Each structure stands twice: as structure tokens, then as C-alpha cells.
Image (cartoon, rainbow, N blue to C red):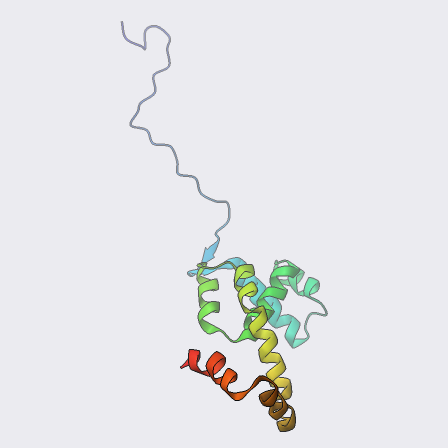
Length: 140
């Protein structure tokens, strides 16, 4: 007697289950879609087309935290890190945590750049040797 005559259900083992696919694509043209939306919203906010992070997020289908993070990342000027975030190698929020302190230093320098007396006071306060050893030597 075989399985068909006894009323049992026969399932062929050669049938493969469908592979699970997410409902929406996460990557488009090898770029993380959520990051692209957040960068677009940040650009709208900077250009004045959106009055707030929340409004820019709604316009682009993102969230305000991502828009704020995208703005901070673009302000940092780290093209390599931005490329890694777009490729999905590093999450946007983790990348922003890495650059927040750098962005604060860059903003302070840009503000004081046109004031030679302030820069001279900073150099005296921190010391030329420490500045060279801690900032310039590691970058070279």
C-alpha cells in the first residue's frame, strides 16, 4: 500500500519553499533608500523649502531624527563616512554619533577663523606642542 491509497497527503520533497522577500526594497541603485530620503529632506530644510525637520521628513517620507542626523553628517564633511552610510555599511545614527564631536570642533573653528586674535589666544591656551602632537601629527 502506498501513501496515496490510505488518504495520507503526499508532499514532494523536491518542491522548494519560496524565499522570503521584504515587502519594499531597502536598497536602490546600491544606496540605502532611507538614507537617501533623509539626505533629501535635510537638503530641503537647509534650502528653506521646509520650515522644520518634521516638515522636511514628511515631505520625503523619512523621520525627523534621520533628517537631523543626515544634516549633521553632511555638515561634518566626511565623504568616506557618508559613502559608507549610503552603502549601508554603517547605520546613519551610528555615523552621526561618531562625528558629533568633530562637527562641534569644526563649527567652533569656522566661527573663529576670521578672528586672528581669538585663534592666537587658543594657541597660547592649549600650547603649540600639544596642538601639533594631538592634531597635526596624527593627520599626517
